[in-house]
Length: 195
Image (cartoon, rainbow, N blue to C red; front, side, top):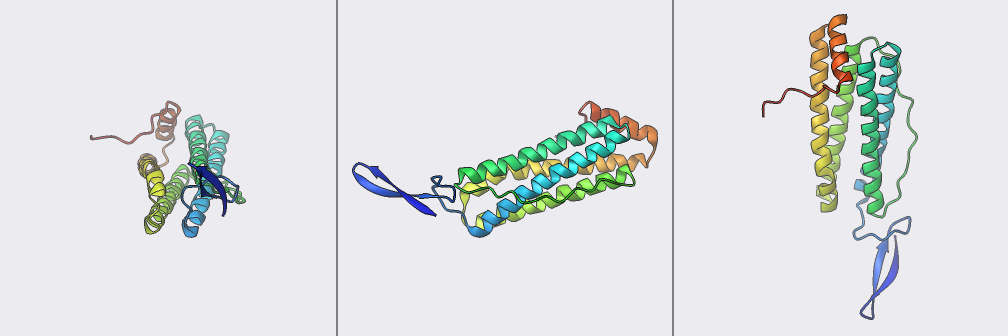
């Protein structure tokens, strides 16, 4: 961390800068910074996983599932972008870690959506850990940043549980899966709401 001098009314004040030389108002706790970087990688990995799933369904002529999963891939990349933007805004350098090749073969639609639910639950757990780290570090900027992301992630987990439930209910019946595929083609993928 370096400092640059600024003058205000003839008085010199030091301004902290981050690794890339960008001004920053508050340094970040090292553990929290590492967690944010790891979560950014997790979002990028989820984007690659969803893309691989979209390919798998496209190869099986299930365009609704492919459409839904392609959009999920874009959403995960957007989430990674939110973390990158936040790190930059906090004066940090974004470290892009290598991604593992995503899995590309599954035995059933239910296996795919079971994996999706587990992946979304893991992302939720990661966000909860980040939130706890931010609270321990008394980093209100980070808790404010994370609040809407956690809320959105809880909704994503709910949606994946809903789709898994519908697929399990279909019990591998081709006609039922085609109905779900048609719904996904038309962006009808939300759970029922009782509110």
